[in-house]
Amino acid sequence: MPKHSIRAVTAVAALACLTAVGLAGPAPGAPAPGAPAPGAPAPGAPAPGATTSPTSPASRFVPGACPKPPEPIEALSGARCGVLEVPENRSRPGGATIELTVAVTPALTPAKPAKEPVVFMAGGPGADAFDDIPFLVESGLNKDRELIVMGQRGNLYDRPNLACPEVERFNAQAVGLGYDAQQAQALLLKAVEECRGRLTQRVATAGSVPVLLVSGTFYGKTGASRAKEAAHGLPRSTTLQVPGTGHGVVPQSPCAQRVLASFPDRPTAPPDTGCVDGLEPQPFTIIPK
Image (cartoon, rainbow, N blue to C red; front, top):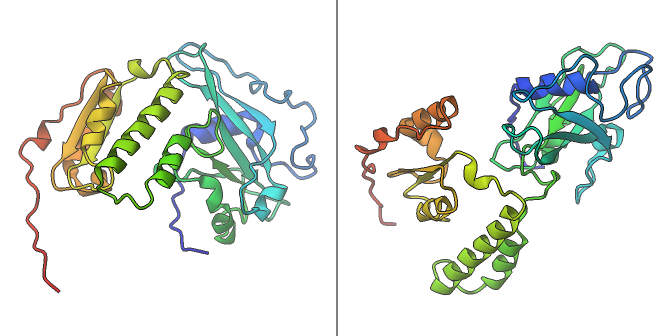
């Protein structure tokens, strides 16, 4: 099995929501995984005493089947699974909802598990958190407490599924064309446009959401120009291109870190990107073999 790095995060909001809707560890003598405890709310019902308001959109856990990865994961056979149903747009609590897949792996010492579970979401962005379950269990994260693995928005097992079969078909068409071939670039752009058009038929509110697009000028796989193309359909977007960086712009650039950190504080106002104006690519030398 390839080595992994643990990317567990302290997901306070997710932890509070998940434990509030009955995902906390079972007490001794509690029903088997998947069975409601005596006096527990019906599946999918809000937690007792929970209140909702326009500023606090309702979320609920709906029990269901566990994901079925191509390679079976032994730990999922004893897990409690389902989806966390949340608003697609949190500023519109009465609008469409999306489903985030959740798996709760029991503690290995169920006689007296710790009260607080570990909540794990993968990085990437877009990595499949469920692929990491074998590694997390082998590392002992659920030794004395429950392990909650949750897919982020847009993850493999979430609904709606945001996969792009159009791009997969492009990958088959592009074999033998050459990475930089003009025909390959045209096919890729067409595939991305088709995928975006299909997805945005459902997400009609995409244009009203503030978006920050960060890219590096040295990233050769898609190029910084792709961020500008994406911005055309996002009227409330801000594009930040950092000179001299490639993949992983934020870890490399203090300027990108500052802009990214300020964006959530005032998402309705364009962020100050002035720090990028004086940046120049660092010189480097290619040494002959």
